[in-house]
Image 1 (cartoon, rainbow, N blue to C red):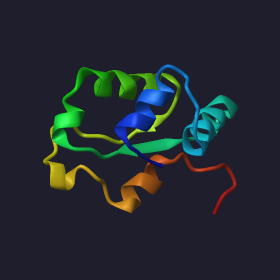
Image 2 (spheres, rainbow, N blue to C red):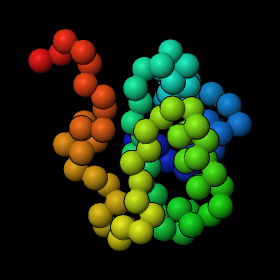
Image 3 (cartoon, rainbow, N blue to C red):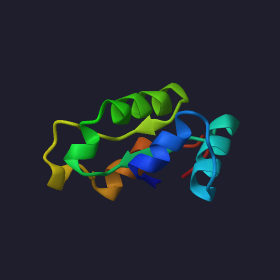
Length: 93
């Protein structure tokens, strides 16, 4: 699920005022594997609240794919990497 800074900030204090945030929170509560791939300007990513929000998501059991050291143009991983970050369901083939 692509997430912008505002959406991550809404999750952090447990605000769910839109469908995407509500769904993310609900799925995490059900234990459904969730992968979040944040992408924003370097100026926003350097804000302390950004890192705190990512840690909150991780604390909720959400897998966050974000490399703060990657150049901006390469911060979005290939879709294959995003899909591979999801756990394989037993019996799936």
